[in-house]
Length: 249
Image 1 (cartoon, helix red, strand yellow):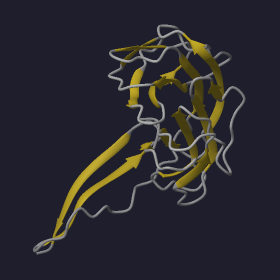
Image 2 (tube, helix red, strand yellow; image 1 turned 90 degrees about the vertical axis):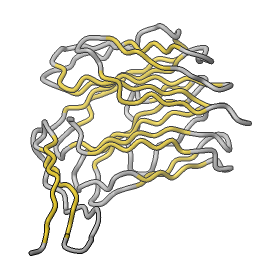
Image 3 (cartoon, helix red, strand yellow; image 1 turned 90 degrees about the horizontal axis):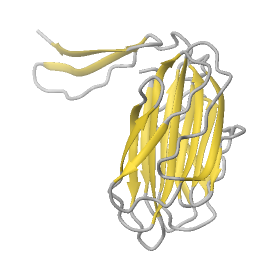
C-alpha cells in the first residue's frame, strides 16, 4: 500500500459533544490524513488543516483534514454541534515528503450520483473518493465503487440510529493514478439507504521511500523462545513483511 499505517475508528455515542480518537503512533515528518463522518458537524482538530473543498456538510458532516506529524503523534480531538452522536474516523500515515494536493466536495447528491471531479493532477498520485449519509434506522448498505483505475474499496461502515441519527461512510482509492482528472462513483445498495450523499474527492502525492523498519513487535515469550512476531519495511511503494521466531540454544 501507499500508506505506512491506517487506523479506522468508529467512535461510539459517548453522551458528550466531543470525541478523542487514537491512531497508530506516527513518525516525525509523516503526512497524516484523516477522514471523519457523522450526522453532526466536527471542528478541525488542533494543529490540523481543513483544506479548501475539504468539508461536505448537509444531512451529515463529512471532512478531510491533514497535518505533518510530530514524533509519536497518536491522537486527535474534535467537538460537535450535537451531543451523543457516533462518528467514524479513518487516519492514514504517508511517508515524510508526501503532500496533500487538494479536495473537492458536493452535498445532497443522489444515491447513484458520481463524486465531484478532481482536476489539474500531474504525475502519479493516490486519489480517494468518499461519501457519507445519514442513517435514521439500521442500515445494511454495501457500496460498489467504479471509475478510472478501478477504485479499491477500503472503508464501508455504518452506525445505526439510536436516540440520535447514525451514519454510513464508504471510501475507495486508486493507488497509482496517472491521469489529470478523476471522478469516482460509489453506489450503495441494501436496506435503509440515506436519502442523499455528502461527497469528497481528494488526492495525495506520496513520496518515494521514507519508510524504515519497525521495532520488534513481541507476540509472546515462552520457554525456549525469546521473541516471535513480525517486522515490516516500507520502501515507499510496497510493505515487505517478515515473520520471525528467535530461539535460544
